[in-house]
Image (cartoon, rainbow, N blue to C red; front, side, top):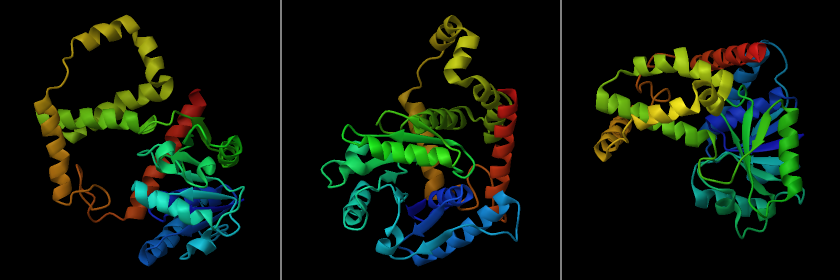
Length: 303
């Protein structure tokens, strides 16, 4: 299958790598030449590393600077551009004249709903959300959301393709954040409160996750874990925790806003809560990916 990936950033490059590793063809488009060049190098490196063969065939992929050429003959279009609603809708308007009648368009967004993305567009029945999780060439989960007017064939074509790649598509409600990022937001928010208001160091917070929460939730899930703890116990524990004050939330928000204003963006800038300066981005990416694969393998063995 030929898949056009519109947007050559980290997620777009990762999704293209997953497509090629799954035995399909990926054409990657971006309006910024430098981003496109970097994406081509990154995809090649990721594919070689994931295959474990530095001299082997990379598979079918290439980059394209023309949108028309990128989507020509594509069976599926995956949109992975900036989180700007107008930019996404303008792109879909352009695609109307370039793609065939049987080509679905799936956005990687979790910020906007399918209704917001597609309402009143000529191809609204072919637009849906396929939200991949980073790193997309390793993590199997992909969230699928649809609007009331989304065609069944479009959903089936996307989910069928994802299953061919070895992914696990799950249908979720068409709500902001979907499921993954609603959980992410809640956890990030509480972690920032603990750092900002109680001076708990990042290493301690992450250690609690790595040595307990991540392990337990990986085995039994969130609601399953609540069952093991006992729902009555959960209720009693919750009642002992007062809701955070507005001051706590303000201080927590200021913590991360101040870091961003200083250019401390995390891995991408070389400094966040932890230092990454001097580290090669590709090496960090691959180290993380291999670790995640190991965890997934362990979970398969115990399930």
